[in-house]
Each structure stands twice: as structure tokens, then as C-alpha cells.
Image (tube, rainbow, N blue to C red; front, side, top):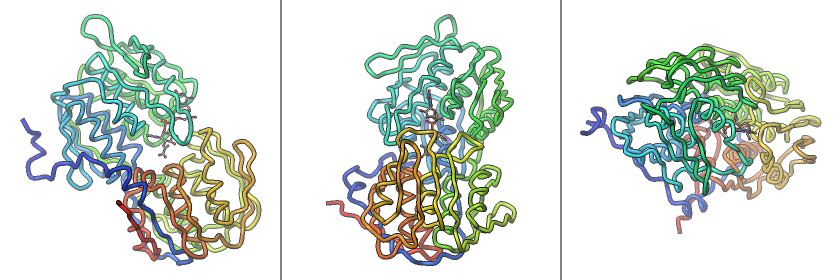
Amino acid sequence: MRSRFMTGTAPMTLSVAPRKQLLDTRLEVSGGQRLAGELRVSGAKNSALVLMAACLLTRDTLRLRNVPPLTDITAMGEILAALGVRVTRSGDTIDLDGESITRAAPPYELVNSLRASFFCIGPLLARMGTAQVPLPGGCQIGSRPVVEHVKGLKALGAQVTIEHGVVTASVPGRGHRLTGGHIHLDCPSVGATETLMMAAALADGETIIDNAALEPEVIDLAGLLTAMGARVQGAGTPTITIDGVQELHAADYAVIPDRIEAGTFLLAAAITRSSLTVGPVIPEHLGAVLTKLEEAGCLLHQDGTDLHISASEIRALDLRTMPFPGFPTDLQAPFMSLLATANGTSLVVENIFENRLQHVAELQRMGASIRMQGNTACIEGVARLSGAPVHGTDLRASAAMVLAGLAAEGVTTVRGLEFLDRGYAHLEDKLNAVGARIRRLGDPA
Ligand code: EPU
């Protein structure tokens, strides 16, 4: 039977553009334009991805609103569809009907293209008592282990083996239900916290997760799980307590605004020494970023869920990435583009991912003066960057290149859009609407 939500809505397109075409696509950014106006922020990618996986916890339909139109979201939809979930997308709303899940083993090709698909292991195990998920492997920014996820699932009674690159997990005993347990995470991993929250929601008894991640996306997941009938307390603090329930039910839930997209927009204003309004934002989600923007000399003013930013001179500063509420690693590269144009010398330390400074070489091609030592970049601001062909080496590095291009003299050609399109919805259209000059050029041949 078709999902009741499928009627009258356009079914989701379950294919991503071919890789070759994406690789040959580029943005041509004509720098030097002042920006003015209002930029609207989409729903948070990193929330939406995990909330989508939560549909596996119930036989009922989960309706998610404010889901951003991104290739990562499409990929997650494909993975859920491969498990038997009916996925229906209409605008920024997605209905996920997990009534008849047919398998507990997402295919390697799909998992490999989207690390976040590893999220499926928690809810699959909780609902089906078994899950077989390929190890997602590393990516451009680091090795990205899943040790904490696996350790936590074992603490909930799962038997887990890793062989031939596949994590096989099962729950022994009658009923194949996980049992609550006490988990202490060695590091406050966002993904591990989320995986274990979903697994614990359907476990027998109480689960305590200590040293849990504090990120807003964890709180958003707790909000959804609660709407589905779960008993979750303490999300947003280092100790999360989940009292397992027998089953979860349908929910209609809106994803929080994307704090990283919002931060990128604020940086677009700063790097072009412009004034912009950015919204909707939840300012508490951006605390460390707003503090650093003010330290750099930007003027910020909050008006409800809108933030007004106005920038003229930019001062150098030091920043180090930390888990929330520290400065987010996902805005380190975009902020470095700004610091490349600041008055004075800045230090940026990347503490979260071991390989997330690859954009330095690209910024240097645009005339930035940056020295590197280990995970630290020392940036001497220059009067002007110069446009050049550059390559975004990961999602946030690609955004950093676009920002640098907005401020540079001449034309910057940004490649690496297969990354950019994973996390920014219509970035060039949004920026062009406030005065940027960015053209997307494709060469499908
Ligand atoms: N870590 C371990 N062991 C583990 C798990 C993580 O050592 O078992 C380490 C990682 O190697 C890393 C650190 O802990 O050094 C943080 O990793 P975490 O697990 O918190 O990150 P994640 O869940 O894999 C999410 C976001 C990332 C974001 C990070 C940090 C999603 C889908 N991804 O990744 O987003 O950078 O949290 O905030 O939620 C992006 O959007 O560009 C992006 C990479």
C-alpha cells in the first residue's frame, strides 16, 4: 500500500547527478561586489540526516519539515528506500514510512557515499534486533572512526563483529531487544551520541550516556524522539538519560535552522565588508561564532530570529575549534577566508579533524599569506586576495573558496561542487540575490 502522504505529492527523485558531471561543474565568482539584503537559512543538514534515520524506529509515518534540498539528503533518502522505507518528498517536507522495512543491511555503494548513513545501525538494531552496515571509512577531513558507536551498542547488549569492512550487530535472546546500560563516551562524538540515543529509545530499561555531545543537533534529535513517544532527558548536557519504551509512533517535526549555513552567510557579509540580514537563526546555536565575529569588529544586532550584521574593518584574532559550545570545526575554513583579509596576524587551530586544513593551499593560490605548523595556521591578513582557479577539498572548504572569491580581485573559479552541493542549498542563487556575481558553469561532456 502506498503511504497516505504519497497522494498528490511529487515522489522524491532518488538519483544524484552523475559524478562526472558534478566534477566538471564550477562556480565563477566575480569578486568585489558589496552585498545588501536578506539571506534565508535552510534547515540544518546535520540534523535532517539523523532525524531521517529515526524513521526506522517506528512503523508509523514520520513527517519532517524544513528539510534542505541537498544531495546528502537525497542520498540518505536512497539508503532508507533501499531498506524498504517509502520516501516521499514535496518541497521541504519529507514523509518517511517505515512500516515495511525489508532489510537491515544498507548497500555498501550507498553507505560509502554518505558517512551519515552509519546512523542507521542504531535504529535498525533497536527495531529489528539485527543490522549489517558497511564501515563508512574515512573522508577528506580525517579517518573518522566509529569506535564509540560500537562500544556503546555493545553496552546495550548487542553482539558486534567487524569483518571484511562490515559491522554486523545482533541482539541475542528472546525478543531481540536491546537492554539499557551505562555508556561513558571517551570523546563527545556527535554521531555516537545520536546513534546511541536512537538505539536506547527502544531498549528495555534506562540508558545513561555520559560525556555526550552537546551539539544543537543532539537536542533536535531528542526533540523528535520525544515527539515520537520516547523518554529522553538531559540532551544538551553531558549526561543524557533515556528510559526505553516498547514502541514509538508517528510525528510531524520541523528541523532546526542550519547554524553552519547561517554562519557562512554572516561571514559573506564580513568578508565583503557589507551589511546583511540572516535568518532564521537560533543565536544560542552560534554563540562562539558571534563572539568571534564581534571580536573581529563586526556589528551584530538580533531582531527576533533574524541577525543583522554589518562589517567594515576586520581585525585579526585567534580561534581554535572545539566541540559545542566551542567554535565549530565546520566554520573553521570559511572563517579562515575572512582572516586572510583581516588587519594583522591570526592563529587558527583545528582540534577536531586531523586533515581539515587543506583549504590553506587553495587560499595561498589566491594570495593569502598563511604558514602552517601541524594543526595550526598562522594567517597574515593581506590587503586583497586575487581571483584564481581553486578547488574545494571538502564541503566547508568549498564554501570557504566561494567566500574568498567574493572578496577577491577578479574572477575565482571554484571546483569541488560535488562537496558544496552536499551541504549548501542553492548557495549561488542565495548570494546572487543579495548582490553577488556568481555563475554556475557546467561541462557535462
Ligand atoms: N571520534 C573518535 N571516535 C569515534 C567517533 C568520533 O575518535 O568513535 C572523533 C573523530 O575522529 C573526530 C571527533 O571525534 O575527531 C568528532 O567526531 P564526531 O563523531 O563528533 O563527528 P561526526 O558525528 O562524524 C558530525 C557532523 C560533522 C561535524 C562533526 C563535528 C554529521 C553528519 N556530521 O560528524 O559535519 O564536523 O559532527 O561537529 O552530523 C560537515 O557538515 O561538514 C561535517 C563534517
